[in-house]
Length: 445
Image (tube, rainbow, N blue to C red; front, side, top):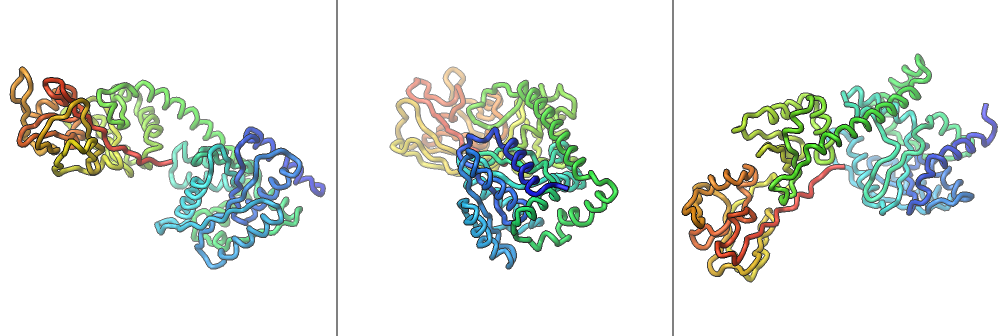
């Protein structure tokens, strides 16, 4: 039996030790829901700040407004923070409807945290060992891979700062004992008792059965998550090594489209290929499930005349000129039409397709910009009249790019193809047509 206040001493010492690398952070923000776990975390930190030199503490309460009882929670959080002398910021968010209310609420919550977190600040959340065990079990039942089964990391990037989970090695039972020892009060979310939600079903129906047979189940599962996190670290290092060999230069690097050389990937085993691509695609799209990886096999094994496309949740992977190319955002939308170009307007904004400009003295009179329709011809010095399609083939221009290349005309005469060496300049060298491609800023964390 613990002596009075001994739990406080033990938890405080372990918490301070885990957070020691971040003692010089610009600030510590505490995700404060008003529930048991975050109340314990806030109370521990407020107490430590009275006799330790810590970064400034600020509490953040995210108000989802999903149920009537939640309307009183911000007021409760204000009272607690006033007692503990910790500033509180309440942020209201709108939860988008979807198949999983839990997931939608989580996404809204972390989006709000990310927006408010300043550079070099740390967000502290109160997930504990039992939460980690439930996460592992939940993801195991969904067929997650090593990355998913590593469950919740102790530390990760969030917005301009870092997210830390300093209670991840503590049990729910230990936190409850601390709360009662200190006479703390907290709110109870009634939705936590609703076993219709998958996490609650595991918490109230499955985990008690496992613990009745294996009392150390939560600790063992949390430890397994740590082992898997370590394994994922090794897989990440291997992926970065493999990707370094495939991250070669391309004649079209100026497009700023992510791409990889295919040959170094093909030399790897199938498992290493998938590992490297998971790492490369991880920040760009939601990753495919096991069955959908057949799309990679089809793209990789297509013949030289094929134009394979692997369609993923947030973009497409194309194969062209011995490379794979990631297209998303604006690159997924077609461009068309004609624009008249008064040279007083330089650069010329192209709707959905970046901008055009001249380097040197621009040509005069009757200029307009088109996109390929097929059948275009171009006069070249010492080569005469040539089919544009053949010229693009000679230049190794990827098929996905050809329809976006701005074509400069005077009347019916094709003067230049923007940014393609040999096709982008006046024969006398008076000017060159420069295309700044659209910025593809679509990405995921």
